[in-house]
Length: 299
Image (tube, rainbow, N blue to C red; front, side, top):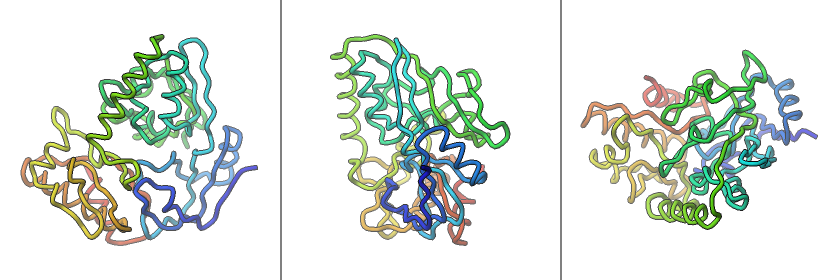
């Protein structure tokens, strides 16, 4: 039976531990329930597990579909298939046990397969586009469609899904046989790097705030612009890397957006480069937040 929650307090689900009540949250467990959810709420927005999303503290008046219960995956030969709600680290570990290489970078990501395909996630010299074969997707214009790699228009942290409002339902990857010990050593190396360079997952954050501009690093630009000293109430730039924001004590979404705008403005002033947010925002009930989003997200 399709699970539907009304006036759902989403704060505890988000990686930033920030957000108000959402009018309706639908939790499909498979494709059939996903179709049912869309039939009931055709205007619902689709999200994974909200690791890369800032939800307004003022809530959201519409419906969203969360795919966290769509968690089936399988292996056949050198191919892996996974539903959009499968967490990256789980699929990475399962592939390692099968002696399959190509998903080691996922071990350090808290997100899900759907979100990682949506944004062409990558790290440590690996990315989704390297191993992607095809995905079952849904769009308002065409319903369910299968997109091959050549259809995805993959580039740095982007895919066609972002430009055409396409949701990932499941994805197929082509991996390579390798020694389990070699795969697991690479995964441990990635985990060690994350511990040294990124906030602990127990610290409320949503990963990188801004995308790297071509040929440069957002973290370098932000640090050079003095962003490590920036804070707005309980929202603070992480002291070890200037492209992360941590919620130190119940920061509101407006605090985080104000801090993002301050960071973006500092880089623009010093380098004449406008950083593009990597974080998605869900809201619209507050006038100041709408103003800040126009500043942050306009091209």
